[in-house]
Image 1 (cartoon, helix red, strand yellow):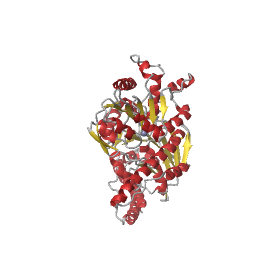
Image 2 (spheres, protein in one colour; image 1 turned 90 degrees about the horizontal axis):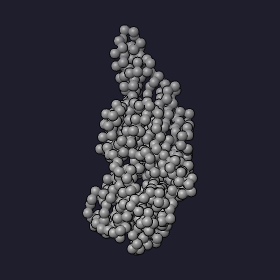
Image 3 (tube, rainbow, N blue to C red; image 1 turned 120 degrees about the horizontal axis):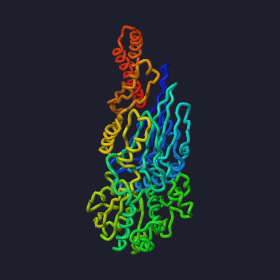
Image 4 (tube, rainbow, N blue to C red; image 1 turned 90 degrees about the vertical axis):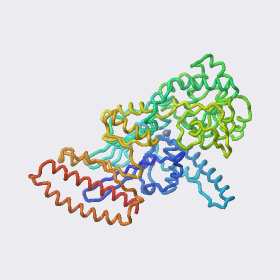
Length: 554
Ligand SMILES: [Zn+2]
């Protein structure tokens, strides 16, 4: 995710006091992977704060790269998100290192230039010292002008909606970043917090144009698939995100294995079926979940009070070594294997796919979002032959896609959350999701709630500063020009931009002096007054935006 909000405090003395804040610092997955190594839009050493919504790699994955490239600020996140980042970023680094090693082996043979991993495990560990974990609902004064508060987003352990208040003299502007929002009644997690108000909202739309089917029956469906597959003598392979989804699956399976839920006498059959979590990362993550039961929802706490840990049951096993993992494919005993990565791009899941995709008696069950361009997406979309670990494999296994397990709120849940605002935001910036999903959801917001919603254009600068101090004088007209998008991308800027901006500023200053004189004349009618004032403000905002672009390009 590449959202940058720059907080500028404009002093009357024409002095700027900039604080640069980054919201999330994720890794591109699938078809946009190449973008990961591009320069950050802002020099990392100039970024003061990173507010991190949650630990998923598409939100936190480039934090070590940010630090490697000079970030020295503070990273705010919830405590569980910080703890999960500690294992996830090291794991991500390990994947980067392995991939670079593999590419270099090939490069040496073909004489091509060697590559470096995006970041190493040491880089990941170096980034942890910049974290400042906070509690849910804690009001944190970042400095004298900026206050933040993390509220539960119900998407993954430690996930947060971030409320931010920016004070500028007597005015305050409240910006809210939704992060990723969960569905209501997600296993283990509380429902997404309702937010009272925001001046501006940055909101995700992963499922902005989809409605999840079978949310109620999803676990029954899964149990049914497990029973049928085992009867055929096949394995059930579940590619799952190591962190979050895996623990939710364990939690749901625990209910059936502990005979609290039954379907067609399933408890007798299930007692013979072993479940393996084959992902070192998922195993570590499960431990972190167990250490953070205080943020679990009521139902999960109830299990604990009754002496049944909701994240363990007799038939559940966590494999550790690579040997144990290999053993799973050697033994002929039908079983359930939950393995990562969730989109089948890396990790042990690839071995399990290699051994099971071609077996018509096995089942592959997807329980999460599959990004465009990933192996998981190809399988879900019905490709008949796929490449796994360099080998072409025929797809003969049953493919299931249980959308009901999605950790992301669907269109209806997103709208419901938005309707919870007592005071509507002035504008919603729709981010995070495929292009069509974002566009459809922005249109839906405007249609359903009458709120101005846009999909921000990549590389455009949006100035959302409000000028409340002028509002009385101008009858509230100013609010019409609070956002101006500049149709200029930094890389197209001329070298002379800084001096041009300087000239423009001088012209502007002269113009404003003569305009002020004119504006004070009582003969001026209100309409003309508003027009001129608006034009001045537009110019002022253009200059602010231009100045920040040229400073960033220096
Ligand atoms: Zn997420």
